[in-house]
Length: 289
Image (cartoon, rainbow, N blue to C red; front, side, top):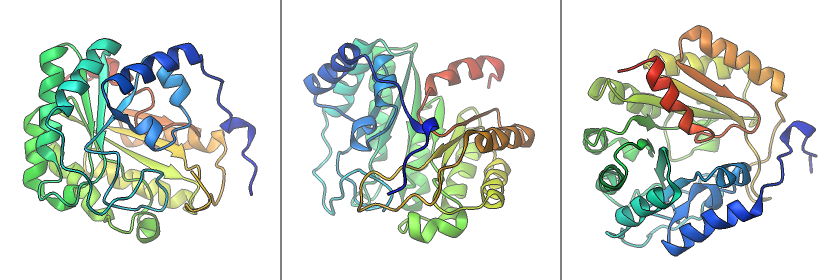
């Protein structure tokens, strides 16, 4: 087993603060991607009183070999009380920015788009000043479902690319690279006032040139914000780490992304798609829509 390098070590969290966030989540019976996907930044984010809410879960209808979220071919029906409970958590945590993501619900014709809408609306009602970011699945290419989500006017529409085109069949066997790009392009066309965002994992066998090509593809469809982070193997049954990418390479990618015209590039070994997502509030001031 490859030993993790020094730059992948995280600070021990203040467990009192972490416990408070967990208590609220348990009290309201909510899931977070922080816990379900074994995010390495859970301590830092929970210490800051933030969390990325995982709706329509915790089981996913896809079994991507890099992801630690449980697989279930026929998940439970959607819970109509989930949007209200999520809004109550946002209120109790006093969040200025909330990220709402979901498992893939390929069992639903609309991918669960109305549940995203109801969650956005519930947060707006409870916390009108809170900005909302949705991190959505590809909806199996149901563009009407995408329009439904965008009609609720989240401030940020995030859909992760995850890896380079060559590795899609191995890393995301039920997804399509071109469909990911099309989703982001359509989002820009349908709702140009919404900031679009995507993320890429590295360390799965991609080359520097392939990462740069993916970055260029994302800019070509108008993606505003990009995150780049190191893939970490959740367990022995998941894809192996091919390499641990050093921090200086992330710096080089960030500089390249900025030269392409991304409004923001967040790149480091521990960066995840929702890491410091609240920084978009400052970005919106600098680049208002």
